[in-house]
Image: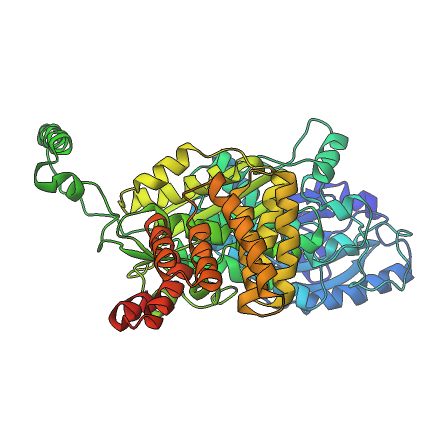
Length: 625
């Protein structure tokens, strides 16, 4: 009987219980869907007719009813509610909230979505997922066809949990509860790797599927779609996909980072909850504020063209002649006051692996150092002050006020195999407006060049003149050995802990870096810093031996790179502690600050030294800096 009913178009106009079938609105692997009239409550509903054989016997039907009751308790604005489950003449059907509008799949036929709409819909999807996951319900088949947009712009998730309910009889024990996590269904391009492997699934599998949907909304295409299903499955399990910004360059780095974190192949590297994903999307929505459109005067075309031509000629002349500094006035700052100070906030580690924090912290330090030494007249907050905001949920304007800066740089780092991607944006503190954003993806051998590109893009935006020393340093840049660089960052991570254990681990990592690349000047400077920490500063090592090792390392560093500010600053402390040579020590500190005016450690040491010498006013100035 069920098969006969399902196969006939005459189901329209018939009644199932007190539901009058009005029209057929869809069909899929989970059954046919009809718009119907609830004659008891006088409302429109959606009736889903389950495929024949879904519930083979009364025991399966009883289990289904129990689990449908669990789903009916999901009550959230972004989830289509289940109202009822019944059987009539062998036809099993579910009654759900009827959602008017179009599916996301239909909407995407016109191409990628605008950034603002993408962010808003993504936020609603994450909030609906979070509500269901808190009740222990996993969707298992999220895709654009299961997301409907109402005429007023609300996103509704359809068929939540049904992928589990409609599994064929025999695939699971009758006692299996809704919250148990077995891969039972899904649509291939949206299935997480663990689903394809037949492993246990949880809310993070839905997060993967949401990431595929976000990718599709951002770029207009799927991340993985081969000609045959087996190739698609293999790509999901083993291959990478084009970065969203490669297909849609205008996509903000923060939003791209969110998509990439959803699409980590290992569940532990993704967002660990839909609530966490929703928080990130809300922050993205708050950051990416589009300026209000400028009102246009209604001018005749002839006047418009004439004015444009005259303006272009005047601009070109002023730019070439730079008459009375007009060039600087004409080039855009993005509006607002000049930016003379900024802070680099700790870059987010998008790998999801806490063991990779050293890498994100190290890149943050390197970017801070580059910006500090690059521009004339630019004040860059030290890493010590900025790192206190690691993981902080404060608003950017508040952070900028607390640090007393005009702008902040925030972003993320993602290291995957031999590739590293840095995404960053420059945000003006006064109005929380993004002035610049960029995403850079390179082989890790070119990571130093990559950091320089990011720093130069920022300094160009705020019109800071590049210092000659930095231009020369940039010209000498060379590829770095990936393992040596990794060891160097680990060494700096441990040295920054400023304790005996950290210094000793730092020594080992710096030595590993030098073993990989004997010409790595910064690694020698780091080695010297660790010995100074163990000897003169912490007294955890015989000072004489520590000073000997530190001097040998810093001498080698300066032989390899005489422009290394960190090495000059460390040498100043060696000659002062070992020889009480105040004049040479001051000279080395001054040289360090010439090379990197924003090197906070050098200002600190110089301030202390001037204080010892009784030069109180100069000492106060350095300590304040």
